[in-house]
Length: 153
Image (cartoon, rainbow, N blue to C red; front, side):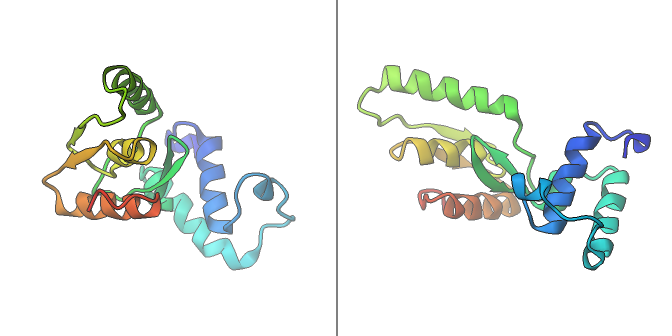
């Protein structure tokens, strides 16, 4: 993958292998050798897509954000780790300004719903989103349901 200009090739390879094999974390590290032949075509497809420049998160269909799993598709941007800092700052300020826990937040341009879903998950009385993309709203709604909040239809 490094020959194809892939940023963080080891991390991308791990993400793709975990997805193809269906094992994560320590279980991934304990996988027996050799590579199971029944997964070969899925692995080759994933590597080919990655080598062509497709983000690993779109290939596997998910990205973790603030410890929560989020579905991602090409209809939405991939949640970035630095955006977690924004969520932390907003929550910290909201707790200061609204000690009763009832801030009204608007996530304009919701994609996967990472910001709004995370805020709604952590502060059930906060969090709204607005988006013009129907495909992105469908992804955000699935992410809200998967992360235990029904406030983001």
